[in-house]
Amino acid sequence: MANYQRGDAAAAGELVDALSPQLFRFFLGQVRNRELADDLLQDLWLRIHSARHTYRESEPLLPWMYAIARRVRIDQYRRNKNRANRELQMERLPDAPVPDAEPAGNLDFETLLAELPESQREVLVMLKVSGLSVEEVARATGCSAGSVKQKAHRAYEKLRTLLKGSGHAV
Amino acid sequence: MPFEAPEGLMNATPDATRVAETRRKLMATTAPVRALPPNAALMITCIAVFVALAAILAMPFGYYGIENMSAAGRAMEFTVLLLLAVTLAGGVVEQMIPGSQRTLRPVVSALTAIVLLSVTALLLFPVPGSGDFVRRGLPCLRLGLTCAIPAAGLVHVMMRRGLVTDDISAAVAGGAFAGLLGVAVLTLHCPIFSSGHIVAWHVGVIALTSLLGALAGWLRAR
Image (cartoon, rainbow over the protein chains, first blue to last red):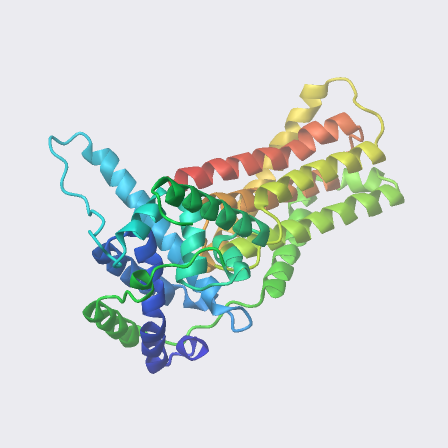
């Protein structure tokens, strides 16, 4: 990242190659649509490119990137919401992107994840899919570590209840 | 751990063509940038501007407040103001850097400032109020809010150098910091030493600017 800031184009390419899969999974875990996740990933890299001066070498990289990724995701959500509000007056709504039938090979997991509130789903995806630590998630989401743990705990509880309800072993 | 994500999601990969396209775009436009200074340096800049701006803005109205205050009162009042300036400047800086460690939520910082300034006023000036409460108070509120405007503008310019990831929190942090500048100007200028006047018309500036900040942030976030 430091080389990227210094104008090293190869370092920029390496960073994109190394971190794109992880960031893609973060988006996919939330939007459940491959095409949209690809769009968000591209949007994120452009945003990172224009805000790369805000990264400091002394600070951890992943929370910085995930904080921007989170912002990209929120902006996309707002855009969709505003568009939906405007289009309500139309006679027929255009087809909105729908979640892939089996985006990640496990429909049950996707369905269960969709049942969680946005904030809990986000924390769970960062912890379990992206592999961030509690401290890193706290930095990325602007919450305290305690709040992250509480959200994760509530998400586990809800998933446990849902799994029990569907007859799966917990 | 009580939960593991499924392999399907863990192994999902982005569209290679799109990634290659993004890589090409970034590599074609990569140029050296200067990273922002550390948080401490940004905070010091914020506080230096805060002190200078408060002194400059109070100058045309006169430093009657500080001139008529006891030495102990001065020491206590300005220590509290400086401590709060450090806290709120820290909040502003945290909001402009993605992924930085958050010490206090901006709403908590603003409330802390309101409580601490009110308690200081009650301790220093036990006289609860004087006549013409509203007539003598409104000019103070107006002056405080007017002085907060340039401070809010500077905070906005500074935040644009960074990347705000939470509009509402950032706007509350900026609003509270700008409001504190209004309070500092009033402390330098206003010679009315009654706790009721200070809590309602001086400290009220921070409450109003924080609320206005929250409103501006909410409108931007919609």
